[in-house]
Length: 86
Image: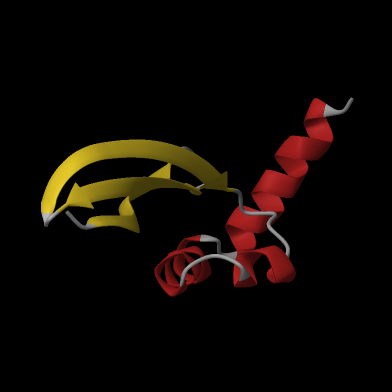
């Protein structure tokens, strides 16, 4: 009886006006090749993510962020955050 664990990013979505990238990660446990358990976690990548933090994301998430987090989106998000603090 062999147990294996696999972690995969099974869903990546772009949501909202500021193009937040929502990442769902699944942990799949298999016994002899048959899935016996699956659990999920999520995290969100905002347009103001630092370059160092973005480097810790998967290549696929980095590529998506580099496309959707344009300078215009980053500026609009920064203005939105600044207005929230007032």
